[in-house]
Image (tube, rainbow, N blue to C red; front, side, top):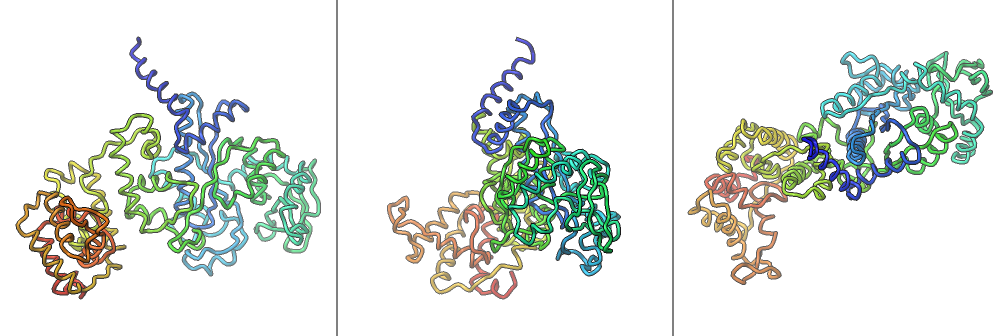
Length: 552
């Protein structure tokens, strides 16, 4: 046996397990493997599309993250024997059809409506030549920060440099066939003026949605009436025209020989059109993956122009990129709300999956999201306190500096420091920011009623003699108080002594009265971390009414 044999044996075993792995990236990767049997290639191209009409949002990142997961799964399935590329393609030659609501001085952009996004002036400053360039840079900045391996492509560059000339000439040759695909999908009025080619006006520079007077496939030109009323003839090559978005989708697939592209459910009904146009122009349509769209807090579809969803920067203010990648991995075919309140859960779920990874066999590891998030190499991280608990500690202590949290972390987990646990330190910083920005302004404390006041007094007495290091004793004391009060008894549950159990109403009351929130962590764990003297002081403030006066 050679020195490399164990490594080779492991790679073979992993590849065999991947053949039947149930995680969705493997399902998609197996489709590409089957595609290569029908259409052998020396290299596989993954593509994602991006419309830079507004600032990039998390859905855009999700396409790249999810595609990267499929790409890695493909490498495992094939033993890393077939090279791949990931091309992030920006449709920055599209005309600006409306002014986004979230730009400074929207009126200044009005003269540039319908002009290509890479011609529209940049309203944000920062040295970028155009609105499209700025938005492209914002996307690349995050992708680079996360460490994605990708190539960036600009539609403007591809059209003007001639990289798409061959498919544009082919589209002119197949003009009638393309029209036969497109016209049945349009209303009667739109049919009368539709053209797959959108000329760039030599007069105004705008992207024109005008009917064509002639298409000369042999000369590679189109003729149309320009905005000045004069008929113009321009070549379809060299960036003087662009394709309508549906033909553009299919033509790009053909031009680049794309093997895999995912897109949102809003594209699903158009997918057969994209496929057919790709085939007409001489290509083979790629494998598709359709994901559900993200919704905002009230259930409306997230829109770049409205700016009603979380931005990439907003998520990263309060949590790590890995937690965001987990949110993208989970249930991509189910509609999910994407707003600030989902962040804490995503953070704790990420670390939960990470903690379980080291105890799993390889079959289960291939289904663990962190294996896909970290391309098969998840880090080993010891996290003694959850993000959810850190948030409650920040709330109880009104922490505006992570040093406050570190005093409690050190009490709860002796020997743990910012130097020994840098991820814990990072999480403490996130927790403080999230508390100050998102929790503190929304806390609502209320006065205890007679039963609740008695319950808090009993809890105070029960905690007084306890050693703060015995977490189970603290939790049992909290439970015992709840069991002794009729309001908080749950007769469907049984206590260890055979009496009634404790209803969640007891813990809800504690969260509302002491923290001003509807829910929280295991209360005994909170007390152990926050401290018994500190918890008793908090109870005293609740009983005195001080918390409801905004002094918290």
